[in-house]
Image (cartoon, rainbow, N blue to C red; front, side):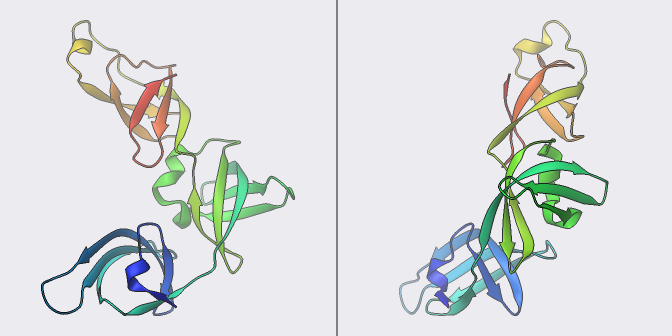
Length: 185
């Protein structure tokens, strides 16, 4: 059991038989009485988000997680296939686990999978990935000096807002945490 004061962003815990990962944490202390801890957490199995307020001193069940470095191989539409880089064992992960991160995964990308009792519950990508631009409008002379952005499509099918000077065929670096354009490579 861990105290709710230890619930910070990224901490995974068990409550009511479900696994949750803290997305946002707020500690409020009024003049009198106990502090209140307000969290926003994502259910690791269903993907739904909850907001919950705890009184200081409450406890939740901590969980033991295992992390394994894997290499992304391919997907068949419903499932994503990964290979353990040490044992060469392959595993399959459902689409629901990947949520918004699937748009930044290309073949042979090194990722870290989080396991809870032999069940994959989360995936951690590198902080940035380099992706090829497959579809982009062409910039008109004079538009590039204003800082205006356009929406392009990358090789994985994800869409990213980029400056007008990025063209089809360019390789760009994308921050996987926010989905934002970083630089042209």
